[in-house]
Length: 430
Ligand code: S3P
Image (cartoon, rainbow, N blue to C red; front, side):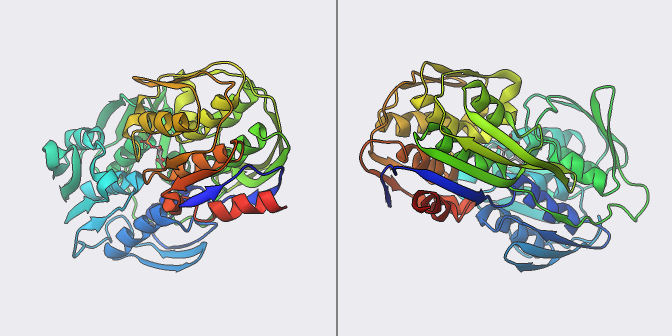
């Protein structure tokens, strides 16, 4: 349990850890590349470590020293049948991307995870993968892990995504790398595009054709090429400091080397619309991703509406945006975000309950929440319920609350941002 009280000032500069989505992909895609790659800035946290452990169990040699990795790629057909069940821990990205990749291999594998991951829906990947020829079974007719995969020859095909999910999109694209025909994806393909960017950099023929994403399985065994890269900072981690600086009365915080991929910057757009003072400097490209430094200062925020096409661009930041909304002037409505109900926790229920305990006036809806705003938060006994983003959002709420906040299960930050509490204290003491 962690106890926090509001500091007088917040000042400083934070290099946030490497992007979680890009870290998973960098190691996973290089594991099936034809050659070796060096990855720096890797997120050394529980979720990407789950991906590393699974890949090692599939026969991939990976040297890992803190944030630097060397991955010895085995090619598209070089993975080995694992001797045991593959444990994806808390990581939906590990389980879903591996399910896509392993469906087209020539061996049997089983994917499982912790209590949270085993309670999350998997039909969203299992159904379209089965339509491409995959043999997958699992609890509740394949909707819940453990998932048992009998690798088989997959076929290309066409599928329209009903949900804007990068995990579904990526699982399908990876399954097609060993298929006997091209895959065409339409519908909600507007989720984060790190998979597309990285596979293109590896020489895979993947492009938008008449508004559909089309991947042709590589015909020549030199593909995919390995790609060495520096993983940029995670905007979903930086967002905690952006909100902290915007809502605290005496704050100026800079986050450096943050990934500014437009499929990930919805939080900056929303904070700007709420009146936050934001400056972006040092814009550049790193790997195949736009990067920059972001400075946020104390700002008087007003309520806003967060819905529609914005949602996939900020889905993981909604818990901390709810903290911003609770202290803003006027009402904030969050809609079209039903996906929050199937994240690491039901993030609509949990945000309403925990921020409610701190005095926020906040109502759940089927696909979002309505936050009255204008309220003074007060310290309370709150609980992350094991959800990393909840633990951090509650930590940010505590920075502006009256009195002491006690956060139970604060160690959940290990999943994506192990240095979070240390970074928080560095801003307070600076
Ligand atoms: C991720 C995709 C998103 C996001 C998750 C990471 C990824 O999930 O919430 O934290 O790396 O592909 P969905 O694909 O389920 O939207």
